[in-house]
Image (cartoon, rainbow, N blue to C red):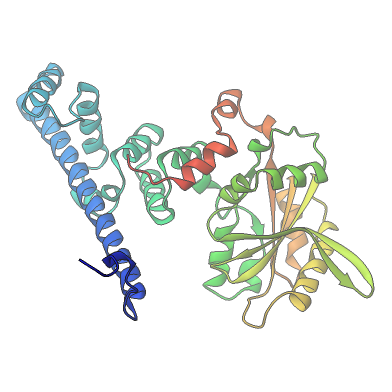
Length: 347
């Protein structure tokens, strides 16, 4: 047989694009199949848990029936994991926590069982559980990343910064902008104490930029640190500059190592003006400012913002001493965070 092997023959025109499209469709189908299998498994666990609850309530079965059920199910399905006594107890608690099957099918059923166990054991309030479940689905959190956000009360801190967004930004941008900021920000991963100076915090945030972006939340893209702006032949340097993809605007972040003072907003406002005139593109929304300080008086902050014509927010940051020792030791390293973000959560 003569001629070149088939795999060395040049492909016809358009083949590469078609192959790339096919790969994408196959990958999407694989993801859908995995999600479907996961939903069925979680629903099965919920049904088993509901049955245990029902029979214990109506027929007076005691706790020992769960141990017997675990033995019988493992004997019947030796190749299937998940039928330990402990996991059956979790199924019972899962069904008790979510009595409405629709929520299981539409929300928490989209999360792996390991995620649901974190929600079940870490949170007692159903609304909080559902909020973290929906955020995990929207943002693709791994189980460990979700656990970190729950421990640091991520969702409870959103929308808590003192801002003037309602007065200066149109809806719904003002709502989105307010919910994009939080108070306080947790910088425990820096390993710094309350005595740290502004420049020390800046340096540390750049060394741990992955964790910093996780703490800022979805939508923030890092632009630069100590960004140079030339105004009237004088040089000025912005501490940290970000772009928010959902708000479609630049976000200037200024750090103050002490207590908030009204005069801090004058400097921040100057930077916002400079970015709007020199950096912002025509299609970008007005630049937003965020002043991060070690502490603030809420009333003073509200007064200081009331007469400002630019959108700004004021929030506190917390360093290592602000968390209890047991939580500090549980925080992962940047390497662990990066591994969690990089790998697919197959659990």
